[in-house]
Image 1 (cartoon, helix red, strand yellow):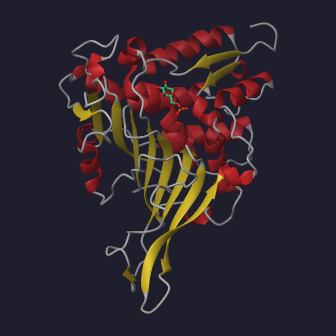
Image 2 (cartoon, protein in one colour):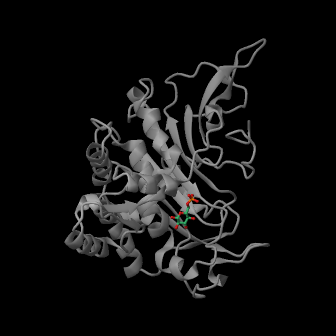
Image 3 (tube, rainbow, N blue to C red):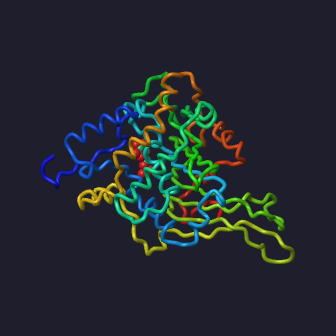
Length: 363
Ligand code: BG6
């Protein structure tokens, strides 16, 4: 398109599957140059998502541990205590995979798993994002059967079920919840499972990344709580109560030698009350300034769809593939816990009341 200043912002989901994304990219490329196309994913506009990069790459202490030698598994969670909010028409054709996973969750995964970019510019940073997507181990039949759990909320005492929502067909098999185990096939992450999940009508709204470090090789102390936790846990909380929390074992004061888990935490309000800002505003500002660094590049969208396409095809060709019901207001199908048992892992569910200034209610 003539005029170097013309820019177009395209909202996610970009495409419906790989084929439509390829077509869309072609259509846009016939009118615009790649640098004029701003594919928006508002999760990247979140201050706390960007802070994952600062946390990892502005500090020397974490990066040496950030790999398969020290990390046992990683959780990426983005769940909501909302329904589909009257968007039945859109949501039923989309489902959780297209609405949240193919874009938002996978972006958070990339920020967590990427290699340090050579410099923080639009090319180097986005190259590293694409490298993560390209390293996702393609799903085998076993993965499709055992490492994916999809669910749909059913009615509870106070809430209606998904199939009763306006604009949703009464026999809909669209997923409102999905949990998956992903593997990143590269030197850094080989053998480390990444568990991702998203869902509507969960007990609370929370987006966070939980990094589980391996246990100390030899445990010589008793734990005050009875069972000792497997290892240290680092929580990167994207929202709400934005912050970072590291769970560590400390000696219980007094006679004897018992260890108790306690927390080192940082909350954003300690930065002097500067509001974290609106994600869309931050991104639109970037577009106006002609800076596409926080926007998704065409090849990244394609690579992400390439990974998820077999799952979409599988569901399409096997309409009877399991879809588990979960009552609105619960943490989703129990099968998603069972999926992690093989690795002796489990989901980290924060309590319902995240309105205090603590990162975790147990504190
Ligand atoms: C949108 C999805 O992209 O992200 C919605 O379409 C979802 O279904 C929303 O509710 C979540 O965003 P946030 O910023 O509120 O976590």
